[in-house]
Structures are given as structure tokens and as C-alpha cells.
Image 1 (cartoon, each protein chain N blue to C red):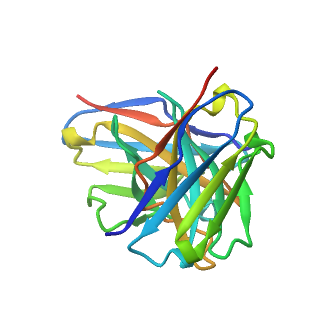
Image 2: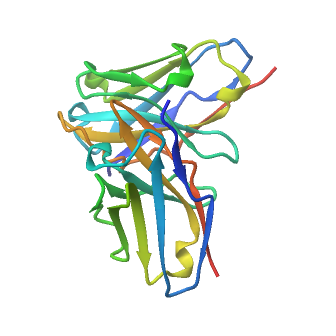
Length: 122
Length: 109
């Protein structure tokens, strides 16, 4: 079965750090770009970051201002999101989402994980 | 940063046709924005419907179609069913970054 499974969410104090993971299975992970997308409670979707298949091309949403770092380990079929200096407004469900294959510019965004909840609160 | 705008809400009757649009603050939406469309129902992860303007996924019902219309990306639902009631989001490629629209709440009434 083709799937993405996120983990690592939880409750963290403002200013703290958290590392999210996303485990892929059922498809050639190393051939696809992967994205992180988040959704605050009761709000819309917000694209967070993307990493291409070989980690050479990485993008972040401007709103993150250098606090988040995306990475991947193709040997482990895994994606990561290191989140530092967390704020209350980072509270959201974080989804990992399959992008495009190889060097294609367009994203499929076809496979979504179930999401992991991050709550930033004192 | 680019702002992507969708209709906040639309209402359609069962069996009817409705078009949702997706506009960019930087100008006309083109195929180079590779528009994606998603459907989300409460308590569920989003489900992809359309990629790269007008391409359907294998699970996308035939009544959903994507296009470019008047400088915007568009999602048209023809022969709407009650189960199409949901929130719909567009996503645009913006020179590397991606930007979601604010979503359209579609009511089938």
C-alpha cells in the first residue's frame, strides 16, 4: 500500500523545538519530491516546505523565517521537519504529502499522511 | 508574498453545475502555476482531485474538471451530488514555493 505516516507531534512550550518524521512505503521514495503542509485548527491549508528527490532543491514558506528545516534520508525512506523557536501560531496538524517525480516541476500532491498534531502552548 | 484567492462559499443544487475559481495576486494564473485542486471533508485529510491545471487522478470522479478561465484556475463540478459538499482548496506553484488558496466551502442544497 502506498502511504505516508507522520510522527513526532506533541505539546511543546513556546520557544521550544520539535522534530517531525514521515515514513514512506509502497512507492520509490527516492524518486519523489515531498512536501510538508499544515492546517491550524479550524483554518485552511498552508504549504510549509518542499524538498526534491535528491535534497538539492529546498523551498520554505516565507512566513517561517528560517525557523524550520526540511531534510530526508532516502536510505530510510524518511522525511523530517526540524522546527525551532516554536510559536503559538505554529499549532497545527502537519501533513507530509507526495510531490512530483524526478525533475518534474508539477506536484501530484496525491498521497497524504494522516497528519501529526503539534500544539505550542505554555 | 503571493496571495491566492478563492470564493469563501458557494451553494449549488443537486444535479447542478458550479465553478470554483482560484486567482493570484501577482496576475493571471497560467499553466506554469501548475494548479492543483483538493477536496477536504471535516475530520479528514485533503484528497487530491486535479493536478497541473486539468489532469485528474485515477480516483477523481468524471464530474470534476479543471481549467484556466479568465486569468484564473477553475474547478467545475457538473452534475453535483450531495457527497460533493466539502471544502475545496487550490494550490499554485509560485517560482518554487507553493501557495494555497483560502478555500471554498461548497454547500449542496
